[in-house]
Length: 523
Image (cartoon, rainbow, N blue to C red):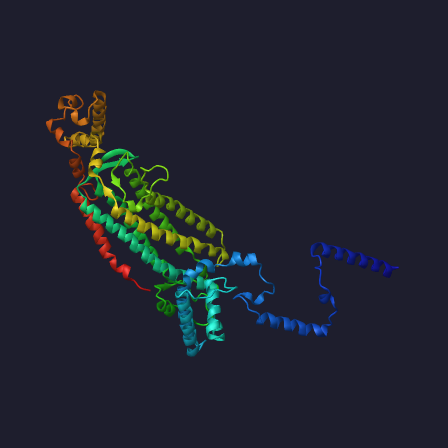
């Protein structure tokens, strides 16, 4: 009786287990061929032949542990060769340096090193000649180059990746690519500063209204306005110079995250590839994308400065102002209104600044949630970085062209001046007579109200009109009603006087000369 009861319980348990397994993991439908009975004796050779076939099949760099084909959509979703091919030469050069470093450790022979370098040279020339043939499975620039290297020199190509991961490889390629582009971008920025200096020096005698809140404020010089933007561009130049050493730091030799097991001399490798230093921690080396964020931040800040400069010129070029006229080379017309001349170059500079700000914000959001160390999320950096560099290259050159070719209208600038802009000068006149500024501010304001009530300008007020406001007014008050004199009175460092403006030009030129050597750095 007990045996019968035990069998019933076991039967119920088996039925429950079968039902549960069917719900959780239903059996796949198998073909009749697969369902044929295979004895344990014949199963082993079959499994072995499958492994051999998998090993012989053409695989990705990471394909050894996978047995199923990748989804074609995933292939497209995952690939980056369509955009990281721009780093082909950097990938080639980095691989050459790594081959030399491996040979120094003895893990590969000198002959193998030479074969690798010779083969990489051939692959690099194919990219330069645009004859490199991309094939299925070339998911990124590293895979493509290594696959082609194997076709050129054979199995020894498989030794190139010894101790190296795509994690430290891609970071190295990107830094090598970016460091040369930053030098180019900095050159364009410095050309813009130079053009501003040239115009400021040449047109120093032109006065114009200065604005706060876009309301007429005080008299300044056109050159002073130009140099206000050049001062911002100088800070941009300082920022890119400060960024460069952090970009030019070597991650190669860090492996996937834990370091290199074959004793690669990273300091010697850094010197060979033109890096200033090595990343001090292998986990950080493959995880760090600060240099991408910093480049995007530099670009965004520079574009903010270009956008504000553009906005000023868009306003100044309008018919209501007429201070400047843009060259036809940087303007367009209307498809409907024949009279229109639109400042499209400046408007595009203003618009592109917003897009680059979006790129920066987007990538920082990508980075903020990623765990240490490498994550595939980082691939999202490259398209944004490439777009940032391309956009900055165009924008800096366009800005320089606009500034070099625009024409100013000094008469229109002078017409934009008004006597009420000398109200501060009136207050300062009384300060020189010993009246506290807080009192002179109110007195000058009362004079402005008086002129408005009389329907005249401030300069039309007589001493007799002003005396009731303050006994300190004398006949020499008439000497302040001069726009040129107003600008000249601001003769401190950085001010609007002729001397001060020319001093600012000289300082900028000295800065460019003193930092010229930084532009000749080679990698």
